[in-house]
Image (cartoon, rainbow, N blue to C red; front, side, top):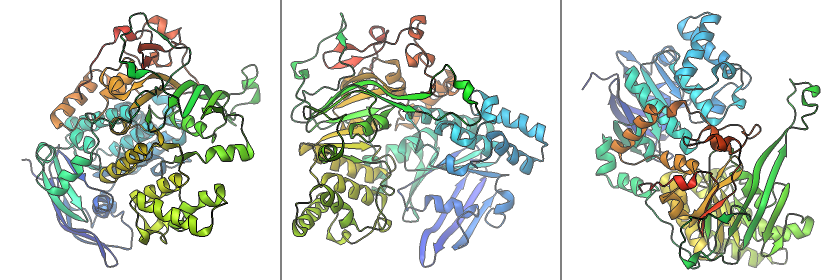
Length: 632
């Protein structure tokens, strides 16, 4: 093994009397990747932030971290940004909002490499091209908020590479990214390690990221390293019980949802869909059941404000700019059924979810709740309907009032929508609901600031369920949670489903959808492009976009995952970029600009949904030519 680039001995980090990192020791050689895995609070980020002098003045750091002869802790300010660089989890908060991308990368080049303005701009363009950013000249002039999450993360990588560091530290670099963008970034990072020979540390709670990048792994818990070894050993034959628990809690594509009692309800993409002449038929269980909720060709369109830099005359004759977030989507959800809605950021998943509860205005189409159209309701009528439809949001901390106790948060819907209940009955219902989500009486008086992320999400679910709704809408409700907490929340949602509550589950994590949902709708730029039973859609996807998403799901086998990423690089997948803007949709099938099997006709025709079988629909001109079984 090569001489260690980084050698850490007996590192400890304390805040007052609390030790968050305890006697950590490790080594990392050039050209290798170390995966650091563990749940929130394990000390993963604190360990490496402290080495770089970023843990704050109140932190007490002990021990040594040597970077090839330099004391990293003592010389953090001098070495940071030059020989060692860090990529943070949220690039939007890490980038300076009022500076253009070219200026931010150029500043790093001028500071660390002494370049002039012209040379820095030229090198910034080269770095963006190296991390496969498309339309480089325009990106250099844009501000961070004008880029997608994947593009912002690529900019962060380009900035980190500006000084050609010996060591790159990536802290949860893919947590908020779509599965397709995540695959591109994982392949890019692996390629950079292999080609540049630099060392990479990736901090994550995602076993798929570990399989994709890591050569060696350390597992942390409560500030300690509890397990370490080669990635194949850690993932394939874990020894420590905690490691086994983390791997067991990780959702996998070979898991199947627990079926509901009545399998007959079917998500519908469009009422106008007609069976294709050669479509195979499935069992009689596909006969449609009465839906609790149904949408009929729902359209959600947002009016956009004209940019101040453009004159009003620019829009003359064009009409006011608008974004079609949801484009004629029809679906059904029955009692006790979980329907997954998947797709990349910007595909309209959240806009559709919010429209179901009338949190977004519906431009056209119908939302039918228990046989009654609700898109025109207002005031008291709408409030009454909403008592039967509840929502759980993505950020469990931000969705709770920090000034209220847990009991008051859960009781609030009862006070607002069940005013006839007395205080004693309301208190009894709150206590029973908290108990049903695994929160004992000792949590009632606590506030959200004293709870973990998983506990906050349980409170949010209790608040939504206390009204005993018939439908629960979950918008990325587990995406920010550790795998063990995520597994607990999914088990809780499965139990809620068994009680007869329908669930609409919005997610970009296909493995999570596979675990919970019997049926799935795949969305792209506002349209439903494929829908049907989760098993059928994931096992034999007929739309090229569904295939692309499934091909991007990380595999927990390191050897298979490395081959998959190598194939992505070889096929030019790193340069594929991201989807077009919903404001400027391509003509015809919106996916044709990224589709590997597109024909000239695809640029002219927006395909209507057709039946692959009685309960499996797809909107693609070439679906009959696409027959692929996805290994699960």
